[in-house]
Image (cartoon, rainbow over all chains, first blue to last red; front, side, top):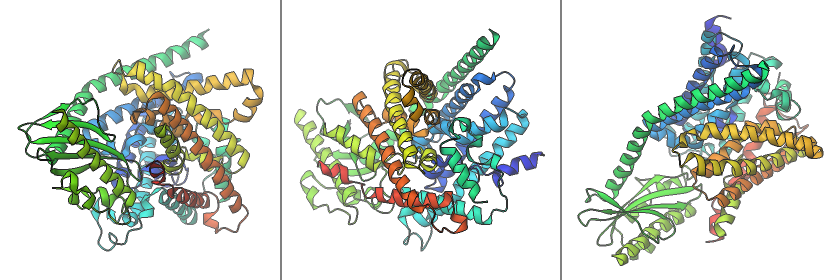
Length: 229
Length: 175
Length: 196
């Protein structure tokens, strides 16, 4: 796989949110406005990039037995750094992302990429993979937020849109709207997406807990997801 | 033996390195964060009580429920109150300045999580209830009408302002 | 006392972790297909939330805050929760195998569940006392339980219906979640006025 393909797969073919259905929590929660969504996407991408690079560099040093705790410590470290930097230089973003900023730690995309890609590939490839996945995550968040903010609040990046501002559908910016728009987007991807993901690519396979949760949650999501094929 | 010791050493050293890095980043960013927070707080105070040049935090034994902090402005200008009330979607944090003659100079929303388009109308700093409260006195409070369709947010807002007036009374009595 | 009741009820109904804060979505969408697995997962979540708060709260107050180490919060909490879950699993396996059999499969899932980490961090952010923090954790867990049980009911009615092809699977589940979440919006603002 060449570099361009490696980058592009995260954007569309293996989009972490819309195709792999990872990282749903931040997607739903921070997509109420475009600015928040882009901020969240950028923060997660930075963490993903750092963690992928370091984990890939250390892949021969970290013993298999303790790899998950090691990954979690590294990821949590990067998340905390990003959190401090955002607090210092973009306090408004910190305020609006709130609890979801530290929760990047448990974002399945990051642990998933560490487990699926970074610990098997070279540093450069891992970095490209992280950028692609990060861009894919940001793109999905941006799409969600663009729909929710434009129709829900009648604004785009805070700029009022004539007509829509007086006829906005507030429910879209609230919790139910998040679920609804996300459902519609995935349905659209199912309808128009040409790529049929292999079973291996899907859902929680990338999650380090896949083995233990095969019987429960992830197994079921996977089942349902493959029904769409 | 090696299988047991190596993982422990690797994990421990990763923890150490990460912690050391964090301590370093924290050392750099902590002063910036405190400065930014203080600037935001003093900017907000200056906006609701324009006459004052500097503010002194008052330590009061008893504050009415909902009032979190009280500041006294210099040159006899008045007081600034920070209030928190539960609104429709969560806490509404407000700041307001009351002049020494008992008139409320201005109220400002610091943070809220009211429903966009409904409750947010109440807490909006340009079109919200604060427009109606500016320049009122404690006895005028009942004349301020709730914004229709957003009763709960309005009630919370009015409750917060009432608690500030009450705190003002307490401060005056303590003098 | 009133404050505790308000915290409990708002954690269950208004700020419901799943339906209004979007925490713990993965198990919500994944494990809610059958009622018994939904119940098992929720009980494990309640249990771990209470334990995690009982352990992380003192750590923050007595260890991190006095030493100005507040910035280590995220890293310490996630490690403590991960270790705790492992420990609970080992203990259950050793001493209460029957309980381990019913809850065991859900425990590892919870380590990286954002609802658990979320509740421990929010307890600190909100400035709760220890008792309030515990009540909030209990309420959050119960809220998760309620959402799971209701949602598994909703999903059982979708089962076997004629759904447009592109909506089959996850999309229709999300739309159903939207409707369930809509019903919880009705609770907004009620609790504060119960005691007003």
